[in-house]
Length: 381
Image (tube, rainbow, N blue to C red; front, side):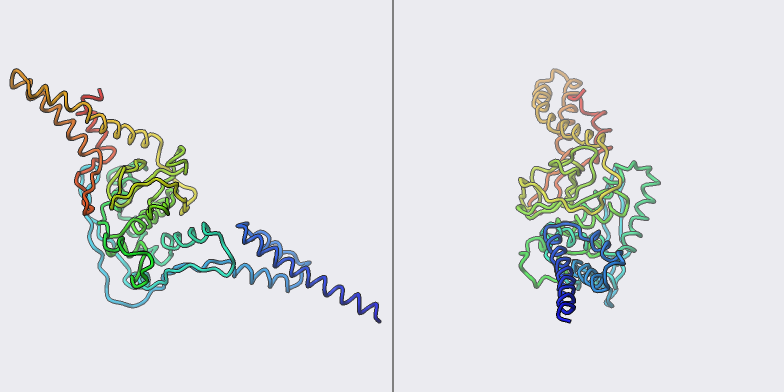
């Protein structure tokens, strides 16, 4: 009987040790960033294991889920979104999104924290946190109705895929920058509803860099573009990346889109609102891995626009001098027009942002800029 008892005790201890080994293995793998889902599935699917092992796998799988900000609709006063007007390729557009009031109030009151029962890497936690804002399902109907209106415009104007991405970007870039919210320290917990979900930014008609980036990413993702957030921790800044056909910005594979004000896709402004200059390498937060990209030809167009703008400065002094020393009215008119073209190029092919955040120039969109260059940029011919 003693021998049988020892054998049973050994068997029980072996089984318990096996279960403990599974638990330790799952924890170690999760801690190191390894995807444990295949292993959990294997444990569940193998009928040779006892129900205890399956239960362990179930509990561990649930514990790994990251708790992120989540919109839970709630009753409140009727919300009417601010109307935004913007120009694109020479035409003016007015947009007033249809916002679900209950979803808006739920977004404002949603908790802004991210937790998990199992240790996750900082990168995984940030990705889960930011994706929660971009992809919360409760705001899907608002994003869908807005994009439906935008697609109607796209069809009517026959925008290319590149132009449509630029159109979406221009809309978000035109929304006023929220200096008051951006100036609040991140440790201030008294600021309700910060950062905003896209539905809040649409309703409020304003946002700071991360809030406007969330909105643009939500629109691009909905419309089938592969996109990501470009997070600059050192500068406390966030921009959007759209899938590139080349190396993209800083070899991230994404072309840079600044959302705080109008600018070209793939061009990085020298200075941002508040005097921010980017020097660090961004962390890439993927919002949609596969989908449409911004073409290499469009990136080349933007490079040409930049070259035209920059070379206008070098060409202008000579024409100004010729106009001042013209021998007749006809020559004066020619030289004056050529000098004026240089001036126009420098002032409308780039964005100059005032200290209060207002755009000091009317940026020509890529297609409009190329057409203008062909007609007027005499120094590039």
